[in-house]
Length: 226
Image (cartoon, rainbow, N blue to C red):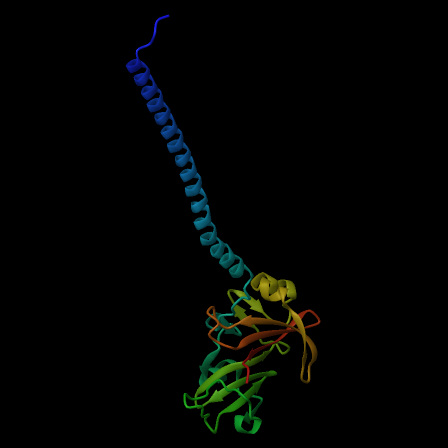
């Protein structure tokens, strides 16, 4: 029998162990690479998920927000903005049907309140065709509009008047109409009410309320909490 030299056996063993180590290292490296790739993928998903969620939520919130009625865009009887002068009032509407001093009415809020909280002692309400306007010195502002005597508003090229229906308002204010409710109004009974915001950033605590009677636009009021 031919005997293999001890040195050859030793070299063979070392070579086998070396190849085994190389294969093992290669497998471990491949496994680590796969694990790293999996971790990178999971990490990316974990980071991406939360970043996208607020954007989707913000879009949903924006889509369902109650609409703003921008006072700058309204034109009473197609001519007057919300704020105008006493001269303009007389030119478009004529003389008021009646007047009342604010100090006699004692409203909890006023439109032309001064920065220090004071109110012109001669400030008054002007009444015309069932509508009410606040007047201080030469300034006039719409407080409440009645649509039952022919007055109307042009808003975004749409006429809002006594013939305006809920469906008409839904085209302008779909989200607000979806939240329409019933309100008991002093001297007017139960009316449908649609509440709109005054500004996009919700700076104002007030609302613009559109009242409907028997499904038709009845009045409009700038409401502010006391």
